[in-house]
Image (cartoon, rainbow, N blue to C red; front, side, top):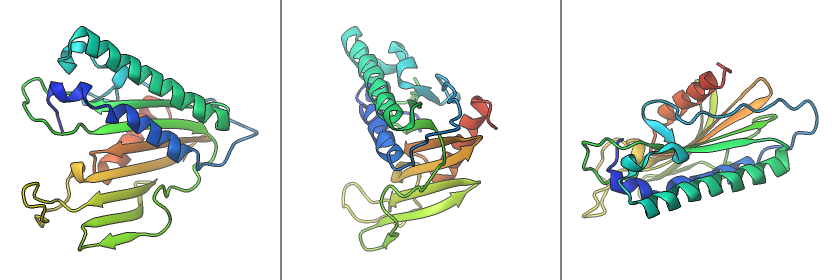
Length: 217
């Protein structure tokens, strides 16, 4: 979902999303022996998702000062996340990606985001909201654990609602309604994607895309 350029710099949630990736990563078992070397992550996943540090000033529409602060915050957040993960797993890579803006778009929606974490070892459980599933039609809150195309996923979503009335619209959820984490283990490495703004099927597709980009497909 493309976003207006003015929204990109304000999307510090993209940086904060890395903190979520660390939070989920600490639930994995620590690896001691036979660790596999983690790969480097690309600066872009496709024409849509670009690493925060790789977003150009033109794409953000920000002035020099705000753009420099944006890039520094992204770099500092990534370094902090990597250090926290490496303290438990000896080696780790983490990177946050954000949906790049469409220059012709004037929409002000929150950008879709992906935090990719790779650590050596078993993938373990994926249940960041706990093992108990939630299905509350009256409140419109839902949480489930699913397997999608070989990825183990935790899916949380809210039913769409009218922002004016606050009442459910009865429409099918879209990517903006979801928060999804999917994980897959390949060749002794755990690939974890923690996302906002993507459907579960889209997230599972991006897991496989990351695997392909790092030579693990």
